[in-house]
Image (cartoon, rainbow, N blue to C red; front, side, top):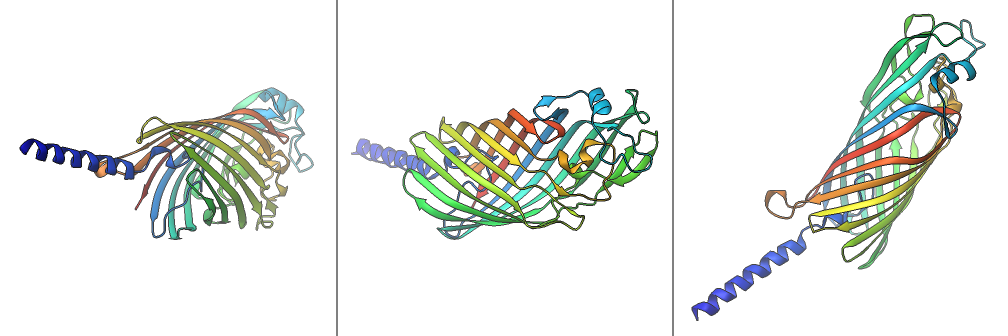
Length: 355
């Protein structure tokens, strides 16, 4: 009798552990952390998230080919050459740029079919540039750094469930980006005449678009056993010209990924992304410098990225359902409009918790 009682208690304990394990989140229940708006929540559920994204750029491309600094300053025309004291060619060349973004997100599901979301971000941008001396030639004058930081644009949106069964899920994404990021940041530059002057920084050093931007899209995910997969298509549509006289280009992004669950706690993934953006239309009259980043024609690019990812989620105790994830992305192919910096890599770290 005692043996039977002990066996029964052991069986119930084992069953409770299995039940607890199965009710915990799987690591691959979310897409890689670089995918935004990938999943929905049950009615009444909240989720908070934090992401840190770091993008690195170095060197320069003319179309899809590398170009040296000396070639830039001797062959690339300065669009503002007609202005007084302006050289005929570009004389300032970007060397490296890093962009760090801290993003805080909140999601809430008023129904099983609708999940609301809000994202707030803080940007920190730095760029190193080289200035060449005088109006022509290849004599280097020196280096200088420019930097800008502050709140970026704010995103509000929703996801609407279109189809859901044991294997496939499809939902629509619709967000609006509000112009809370500054577009009038200034900084000190080193001119070819060996003068340091305060001026409005070029377009990539600004923190927002200056316009209300619509971001519609569609997300599909699937799962079978230890494998999950998905694809997402997103657009960014600029609504108008901003207060400084220009409009950033429209964007589109197509992402695809697959993940394998090593266990409930850990999954690994790989994927790809195609990103395309248009050139800037219009011009900010306060941004007129002999550097490629001051020319609105030098914006817009087509990029194909390869990505790897790792997801982890706690299963028991205080760590239960706390999620950590990383993703690393490198470009496989880049083709830019005009003359632009070359992208090196992007790293994303994230934390998420639903309750």
